[in-house]
Amino acid sequence: MSLFSIALTLFLVANPIGNTPAFVSLVKDFEFERQKKILFREAIFSLLVALFFLFLGQPFLAAIQIQPYAVSLSGGILLFLVALGMIFPPKSSNGEAKKLQEPFIVPIATPLISGGGVFTTVMIYARQEQNYPKMVLAMLLAWVAVTFVVVSAAYLQKILGKRGLLAMEQLMGMMLALLSTEIIMKGAHMLVEAVRHA
Amino acid sequence: MDIFSIALTLFFIMDPLGNMHHFMNHVEGLNPSRQRMVIFRELCLALVAMLFFSFLGEWLINLLSLSMVTVYITSGVILFLTAIKILFSQEERFPAKHGEEPFLVPLAIPIIAGPALLATIMLFSSTEEAVFTMFTAILFAWAITSALLLNSRLVVKVLGPSGLIACERLMGMVLVLISIQRMAAGVLLFINEYK
Image 1 (tube, rainbow over the protein chains, first blue to last red):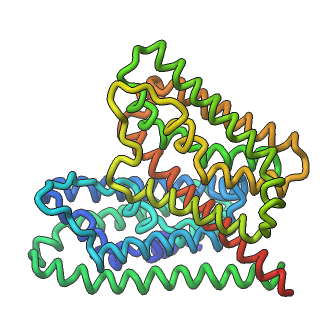
Image 2: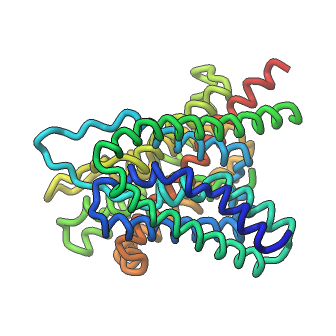
């Protein structure tokens, strides 16, 4: 496969465009400049996590005996919890100023950007290509685009405004719930396959 | 499973990097030499609890006549909820009482040897035949955990505060993976009983 097509596949699997609403709603309580910083940082973290899986994914998962279906199931379940948080926002204790907690690695960097899909894709291509420099280059290329999309999510909030954001959060929470369930079902399929072959 | 896998899994569940800030908070008021003493004592207490469960695990499972499916799924669920708390909880899970020296609770149990770890040890000790394997794996994981926690000042200096949070988060992810894998293993076992 060519460098470009690997990069494109990775970009599509990381799905930054589809996840934009989730990014926006996770960082909505911060200042605009801060949002951009957080999103940029998370994009870099997601690249680091994906690079870790490129080089050490197989031995790492083998060492703690994790099967591929567990990677999908865990990612899907975590995303489903994020979606539930979007649909049913946690009540802020009234009066008491709640300390803002920045999203740090979880859930934006992983599993939203670098989820089970990215891990599997990276590991499969790494085995197919047997060419680490090419893989790293393809990932860097993909992540230039990913980072761009992720950081520009901060602008979406400005366009939508407060009410628009609240409305979108509900709808997109529903979409994310669907997407995450799809990932869980993929994991479930793999699990059933494992049962058959056992 | 080989010794290395068991030790690594136990190490992840002990989660010294993720729990380091609990340790730092709880011994903060004491003088430095006393701090190390207290941490070491708590680690030893945790080790006693772990070894106790590794010997009694199989006996306990037989006594309550539990099936392996039960043990797999229960320990998976407990571990999953613990991991979710680590990843998403906003409030301090074990707030430190100021000026009070911690004893047994909460540092030894449940922060190091919590229900998730003890259930895991019960599970492994009943699937592994050799007592020696379990014993070595526990000691190995415990030794690394101890080395990290006794030198927490140095670790914090090397990783920096955000590095520590990063480790905590990544460890939380690994715990979610382990817990889901275990629940799935339980489900596979359950299905195989009908084949």
